[in-house]
Image (cartoon, rainbow, N blue to C red; front, side):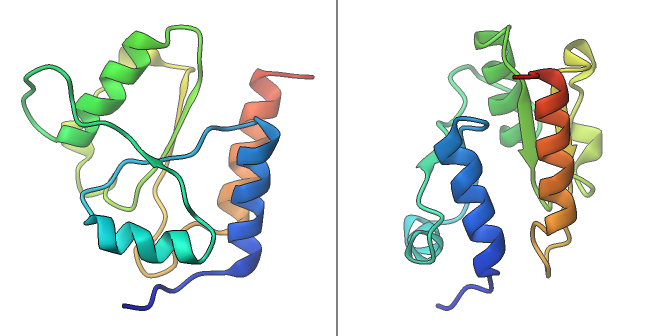
Length: 128
């Protein structure tokens, strides 16, 4: 399997992670072999855990909700190409201001504009 990617985007994500600006994790239903392909191009990050509690609806929304409850002082950026199709399954209104959701096109993935928006949002929230 070959994965489409931009070396420049991969490098920016790696730098954001290494700098401590973000902690990147995979929240995916892809198989380990599929995420291994992404690791080979430089996106080798920990997989987010499955939900701890029983849940209704979309499992990814349950993981995000649990994480926000477990980390009440932290911000979260959720980038997922499925967000627009699963919007009815996501209610994070109680965490307004702490969550930035990015919905990249499935055929393009994250772009420089997405990463610019993420960096600006995080830096505005945590000026250093």
